[in-house]
Every structure is written in C-alpha cells, then in structure tokens.
Image 1 (tube, one colour):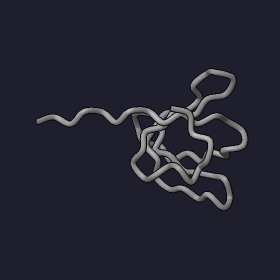
Image 2 (cartoon, helix red, strand yellow; image 1 turned 45 degrees about the vertical axis):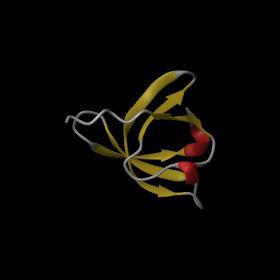
Image 3 (cartoon, rainbow, N blue to C red; image 1 turned 135 degrees about the vertical axis):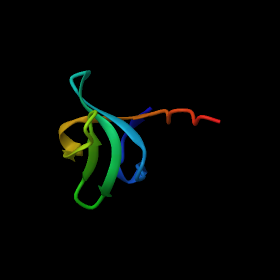
Image 4 (cartoon, rainbow, N blue to C red; image 1 turned 45 degrees about the horizontal axis):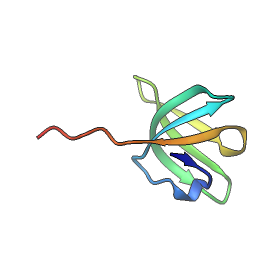
Length: 69
C-alpha cells in the first residue's frame, strides 16, 4: 500500500522506498519525523540506518511477516 503521509508510518513498519518504480531501500521504520518529512529506516540485511527524505521517493508499506507459532 502506498503511503502518502509520513505521519501514517509507525516504528517497526516495513517499507519499500522507490524511485521511478525501482526499489532503492527496504527495511523497518526506526524513527519518523512528520514535521520535517523524513524517516530513518533500518535498511538491508545488515540493518544500516538510512535517512529518507519523503519528498524524493514514493514510500510503500509492506505487509508484516507472519509470526512463527
């Protein structure tokens, strides 16, 4: 689902950050700052912290992985 407002995101949400339909980053939201239009995500397999300027990309919220029982 595409996210139109950064304020709709919560810590722990899994997102894809896209530019021209190409995924540039994918990870869990770490910090959201709606006033500035930015968010930090834990990006990639190593969980590197990446600053995302929402005005430069489209943000897609991904389904949360199912929990193991």
